[in-house]
Image 1 (cartoon, rainbow, N blue to C red):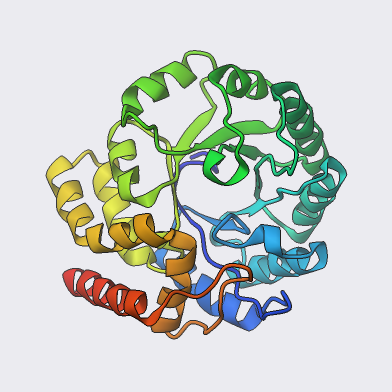
Image 2: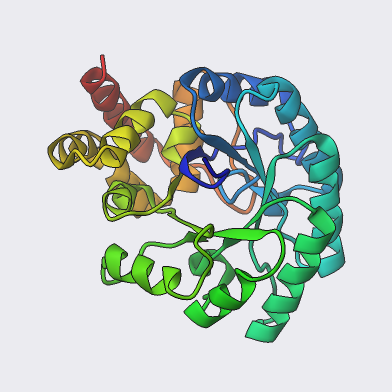
Length: 299
């Protein structure tokens, strides 16, 4: 099985208002993921607030996570940064700390061109010397990978996968076929956007990069496994149980919602990094109700 297949759980990175990571809280978050046997852990992704942390804190986070996981679940580390040399340094740090793979988004203040992104990814892939997934996240980075650019990058050594946003037309099968027609057979294609990722797996996606799985691994795994088995009826039934949570993700952004869930699960009590603000009490009440309803469904 490829590193970039199955359910990849993306946890928050608990940190104080100064950006200092609480490694004890991180361990509490990661242990249930290991026990549930998710297929991989996506550390320092967008949900993991990588862009808000210093290089030192990111290195500390990887070291603590690798120690906690103890080789039982592969760890994929986000290494996005504004500067190419900084992203290269982060990739080397992740490899030295024991990461199994890398995830790279084209972070930039200045809008980037395809050739600039290609050169950036090639340089980081070479420096990291680990399997690397392209992180196509236009909602955050404002850069959209064309199919031609994905095809070009798939031929670069160490670049072996892509993490895609949900297609606007919902045509997973068509998009998967189009990407696979110009990439190597070993190249893996996964999706993020929890509310429609079960459908992506049913359509033949290799991976689900999940925010929900970072805090609710047992429930999310049940949904993922139903989709992987091709059981459409069970997938739809389980996905319906998640729908109140998916609705909150769509309304408020999953990044804000999971900080509330982490507190409700007694894993940690931290706020999102400023300038992102905590959700109001009215939203917290709805999250509480959604979480109670979901967990009742699985007990």
